[in-house]
Image (tube, rainbow, N blue to C red; front, side):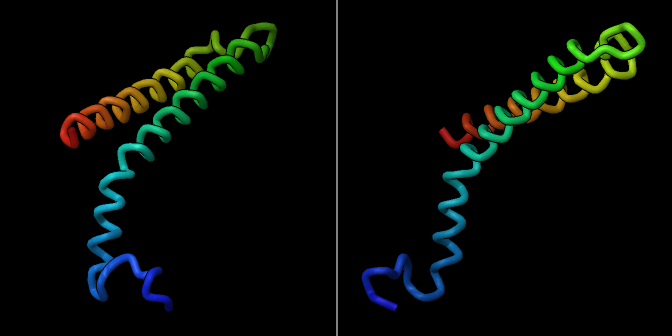
Length: 89
């Protein structure tokens, strides 16, 4: 190993990794919330367009529960990210 490629002193690598994770967790969480929101919107669009027994899939109450639950979970995650970002600020 070359000396210029060493990032931390021996025994300090774990601490360096934890500091790095501390800086990137908000970014990764934000990305995950955005991806989940996009997936929910695609699912809702599909449910509106897909027809079964002559009616859009979105008209069935059992199907309506799924995006509603998705929305609650995504919104909860979004607010947790905001809270974590405020704490990091």
